[in-house]
Structures are given as C-alpha cells and as structure tokens.
Length: 138
Image (cartoon, rainbow, N blue to C red; front, side, top):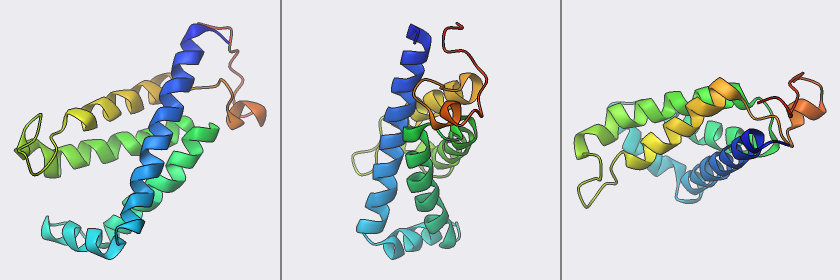
C-alpha cells in the first residue's frame, strides 16, 4: 500500500465514521424533531429520514470501502445543500448558536477527493473485484 492509498484510506474511514455517528445521533435525538426542523427551513420532513439513512448506510459503506465514489458524491451533495440552505447565512465560524460551515467545507473537500480518486486499500470493492486498480499505482 503506497502513501496515497494510505491517505485515501484514512480519509474514507474518518468521513465514514463521522457521517455514521451523525446519522445515529439524528435517530437517537428524535428523528421527528429533526423532521420538524427540516420543515421550518422549507424542506420536506421526509428529507430528515433520507439524510439520516444516507448518513448511516453511507457511513458504513465508506468504512468498509463499498461504493466509495458514489457514497462520497452523495455526501458532497448533502454538504453543498447544508451549506447553502442553512450554514452560509451564519458565516464561516457560526454565530454562537449554530456552527458555521467550516467543517462542512472540510467534509466536502474530503468527499470530492474520494469521488475523484477513490480509495481501494482495505476496501470491499477491491476484495470483491469491483476495482481493478493496483494499490501500487500512484
């Protein structure tokens, strides 16, 4: 495994864990409350369930390396949506009540990296033969 693939593995697993935890917290904290909040910002309450489901399933998929590029693209879209719909108006660092979009930007950058480059080291995609990429390639 070269340093590029090791770096991509670290990014993939960290992004996966982060989204998995965020999805779980949405359900633990009462997904109905999240759905209500979504409605107050002009989104369908159903979107809360979809977002939480994507975070959980996608987080697990990234951790095990299954569909990394597709899942990362979904996460990138979610980060763009969250930034434009909610976070942009509170500023880069937030306003004291709501966090800013600095972390969303970091997650977006990681997701875009994974869309463009994938992550094949220790991935289920590679083990199942879905990836023909050689880990030794730069």
